[in-house]
Length: 386
Image (cartoon, rainbow, N blue to C red; front, side, top):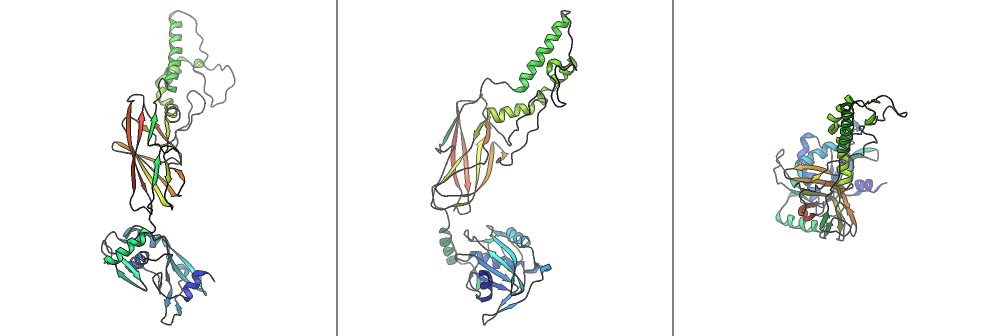
């Protein structure tokens, strides 16, 4: 017999255990919300259970009202009801369990370390701001005294340590970058080559010098996907290539900027507290101010003059969004272990700093969110452009 089966068979209703004869149907969603909210607000440690299909009799025995399998309610239905009406979100599951041949339903409510949980809008007689708490086998509306107890209880689970944030393992608050200078884009190099070939042919024609276009006369065998060198193309084709040069080399130019010329930037977070920081996420704001933050990682083009692969996103690259005059970079990190350093972004951010506008400092802002933080952690970092 499992521990949960033993609880169902032998335990009485209390602060962490409740029995219901039937599942919650649509007309009983008000009761569903109140019951789960009250359980989640109870100032007790451990999991809480609401068992459907069971009645707790006065003598301590249980009467079963088995739930037909084809009528068992999917947990997503209940989770949606709570998610739409209660804040913050309550972590619970609902699953079937067989006890002495009877199918019952189990609400398992866990990780209730962010109370008080309350109504975030009006619903079916419940008002925005309503809050219920379970005391013994009863539920009551929350009082000021209950709130004080809840806040004292919550403080035991909240993170009160410090999070150090910086640009590298030294946790520097300022990153110095030097913009690239004296470089040429692949499109510029190709343009020069084509223009030189066309100019040479124009000069030869003007001087009456013979010129044999070797278009189609390959100097060696090539695969169908291997480009023909510009010198072996006819003049008409070269002129067409020249008109389309920006489009042809767009991805190659982008790759040069994104992977070769950009700074690859990341943040390091170090948990200096004594406990985990749970469900951590971060937002990093970088003012635009003439810089470019890539929204995806360019893929390296294949070898060849004008045959390149399209740019594709990396599945591990953080989300980058344009918001007014800054870039907003977001990432979900997960739990942050204490006394350990963790990268904020799984893939480094690609930031291009043009040489124009050097000798200045850009001030960036970060915000760290976590389940057990009393409030988000905010701070500033600087990028110095030489």
